[in-house]
Length: 147
Image (cartoon, rainbow, N blue to C red; front, side, top):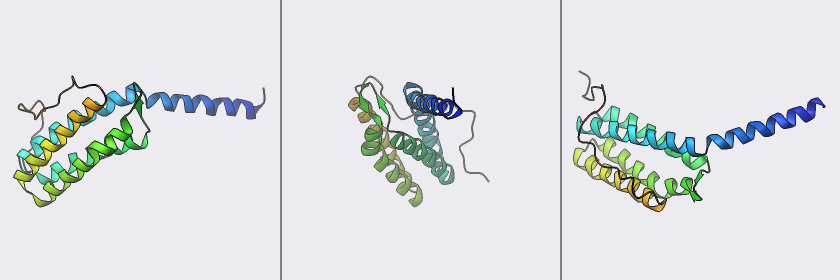
């Protein structure tokens, strides 16, 4: 077998592997990241640690960008399009609240983000997954503003 043929087979197998990564495992990792970062965002906002809240909003935005750019389908549904249509604007709203350092606006926009997550789950026919505002901090992290 020629080297060019082996190279073509290798490239084909590599592209198949990359598509697989954007499958169910990618969706699970993305949802886990969303949940972890959104919880941490809540606790940072409650502590009025705007720098940390900005950091976690940025992390949520990166997960969203990966989903959008990944052209991700799961169970026949275009999750990339759902994220673009439902989540992206809510991240922009979070940025506005954080930039204004406004706790009331933060809470309002955070609830908008959580509602968008639940609407996205419904659109993807995973309405049984309901996200809510965290009530207990499960992290071994101090969210207060550094002194």
